[in-house]
Length: 361
Image 1 (cartoon, rainbow, N blue to C red):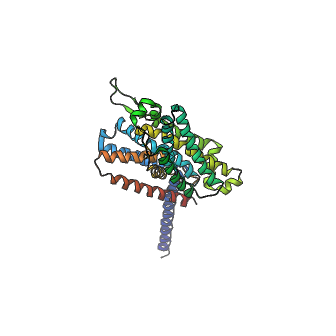
Image 2 (cartoon, rainbow, N blue to C red):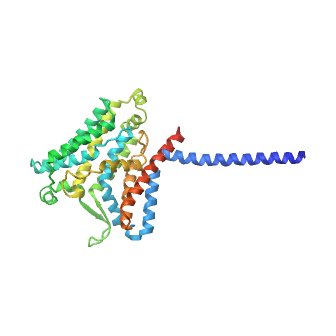
Image 3 (cartoon, one colour):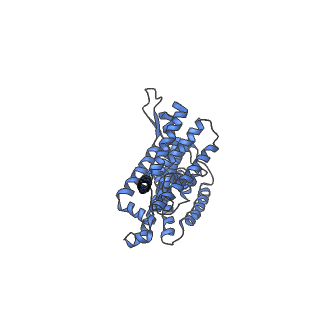
């Protein structure tokens, strides 16, 4: 009996040890995954982007998986991508900017009106649009940083003000593409296309626009600035804990104002690219840029609570939307499926962010 009891006890201990080892191994794997996502939040949207390209490529073949189709996605998301880069800076500080789309459109209207109404050189008109965008962003930052007003309320109000100013100033008139092409082609510069890998007749190959190049450059510059400069570290610090950042010597007010100013400047670039994309200067364009930019940022893994996320994530997020939109269109699916899948991705991205924060705590 004693031998049987010893054997039973030994078996129980062995079983318990194996269970503990298995649990520890599982915990270790999940901890590694969580740590990887915490350190590099852009891994999730990058994986989703690659997986979606592969799936649509297998389903649609060369109709989707071709240089022309893949670069068409870049052309379609260039405006949203640029605005998403601007929105990312604000969200990293735990804020939000609902006026980004209106700033982009007003900047484009200013560029067009300064050229055609006042007869100024196109270069001066473009510079004026960039300055106005920066100024509006600076006002947002001052109201938030100095006056201590909530970012949501400030930018909601600024969205309405800029939207109204846009229609009043432009008199709801559109500057036609033909007039721009004849008199001020520089306004359409970012919409100019060029090919890489085309044959001697200009057929085939990948088609890019200078707007796509501008989008990639903006993300590359912001990636460097946020990771390699003191200003970038201050942006993350303010988003993570503004009071602790202030105590550690960070000028929180100046950082916030500069973030919103840079956001306005980038939105003005998006406005310039918008002229090139649609060919004309229209006060009614870009109505959904606010929502689309936030969508790209959230899918891209930047936390809405601020202080965490990779600037490259929103680029992947914008491309994911572009891949789903083009892929489902080529597959002949109803457009509503795009909204369904994007909505699912948004909720999933927020859930992953909450999980990472909970496990990290």
